[in-house]
Amino acid sequence: MTFWSASLGALPARFRKPRLLIVGCGDVGQRVASILNAYKSTQAQPLRVLALTSSADRILPFRAQGIVPLLGNLDDKTSFQRLAGLATHVLHLAPPPSEGWRDPRTLALTRTLRLRTSPSTFIYGSTSGVYGDLAGGKAIETLPTAARTPRAVRRVNAEQTVRFLGRSSINSSFIRTSILRIPGIYAPNREGGTPKDRLLKGTPVLAEKDDVYTNHIHADDLASACLAALWRGKPQRVYNVNDDSRMKMGDYFDFAADLYNLPRPPRVPRSTAQDQLPLMLLSFMSESRQMDNSRLKGELKFKLRYPTVQTGFTE
Image (cartoon, rainbow, N blue to C red; front, side, top):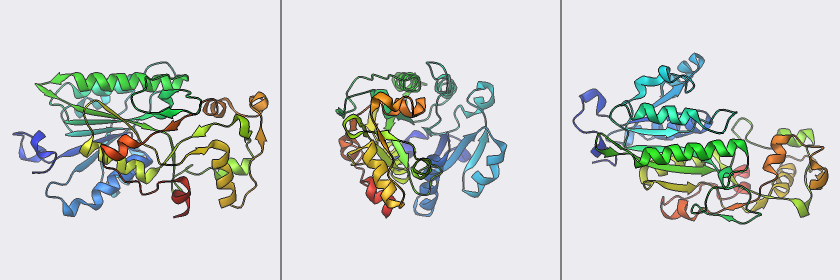
């Protein structure tokens, strides 16, 4: 018996195969699908991958990747009602809207899933921003959230919605929910996955005395971590998904500049940074924390393929 077979019950034959629904199937979601499809031939009950997409242009590319596309828009709940009872597992990677203090998309999705037979597992990709500023201190999963930016506040709201889903019984069964807190995602083969464009623009970074700690995860490691949580995540559990790097932001850009044979970015004091940097970038530079990944490695038995930024960029 595979890890998922106990959740299938006495369904019609065509619905007995385990199915993973990826909501927000961008770069990372497609890497997850690629991993699963690569191992299909070795599995007695291969996990069928479905993906919700709001763009008809993505239907053919998804099919070419072995993904079953489902048209629907999280901003229009009537467009994805048929998702109820469709998947045995859900990986939710879609971001909240760019405005407001709540995440109506996650709320609409979880309400839809509660309409019929529930999935056995629900994994949500959140952000490390929910910790807020720790002044360079360690971010562990047991800390209370202290989001300071609107986008992080929306993620806290989404996490609360996911926690409620995990506490709810649907048709006398419970959904195992896990939350992944994700820092900056990078990969040389990911669109925008390197700081090269920013280096070419000569965007400044903070002076050393004002600099902040930043955290990273390679896109391939993140995809594998999503599956590790799907397999081994504990109910109502939060996991930091980051590598072992302990770098300040300026050091990260200096490393990348040296790697690409580009000039290192200029350093500016925080007192003048607001006059030279966009607001979005300033918000990232206002928070400093060092994420702890002990729970990822211990509970999920996860081994990083790229334990540091240096290995992720050079291997």
